[in-house]
Length: 278
Image (cartoon, rainbow, N blue to C red; front, side):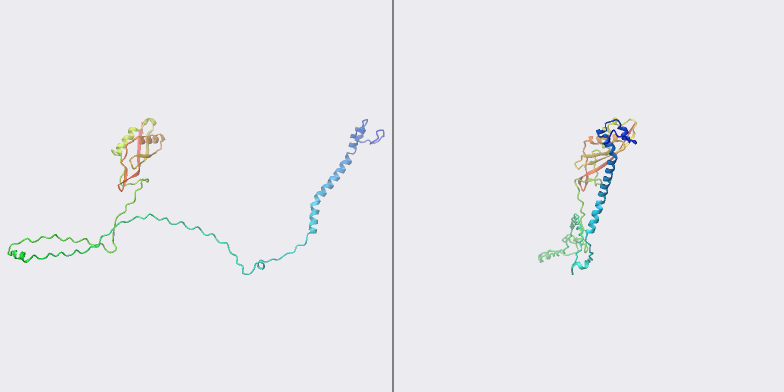
């Protein structure tokens, strides 16, 4: 510890600061020894840092020095494989078999086979007895003989390889909706009667008075029992379409169903509808 009574001609900054103060407290010693302690800490830290950095390189160098010399081996595949070894190549996957062809339903064709004509046996009429022959009179007058029916030859047989066929009509579906039929569906009284019922049941209050001419096409299915289902309307005005569908559904009269081969079928009916609002 510095002597407080000693006189120093060149006092330091710490001595000036701590002049006339209690230097034995310890703060003065800490400030005077600060530089030497800092220098020692810096040197020690630098040494530790260098040791930490160089340690991996030193270890690596030691391992290289202790490592055994590697010997190169020239191995050829021909020398390794035994004789007469067959290497199987991977088999390609066979494509799946194609699905079996669908058999189309066969339509039976009924043929009318004309039987081969047989020659009719000749009918021989036996001569009358002699007693009857003696009763006949001869002279110049004509006498009526026995009338026999005229012979009608049978029709000629068909030529070789020819046969008569009967047209097989396609089966009629009970669920399919047809658009082409042999006999159209018909409303009682005709289509004009149906239009009159539509016009009479149409509620014009749903439309604006200045709507002008409005068009649509009403499409529905006439069922096999004559009822109406699946009513739709295709037109630019939604209100007009909705009222047209409601009006057609409200008509409960049944139609005469459409027919194919004499059987009733479901038929799609189209009816254009035009109204003018002023």
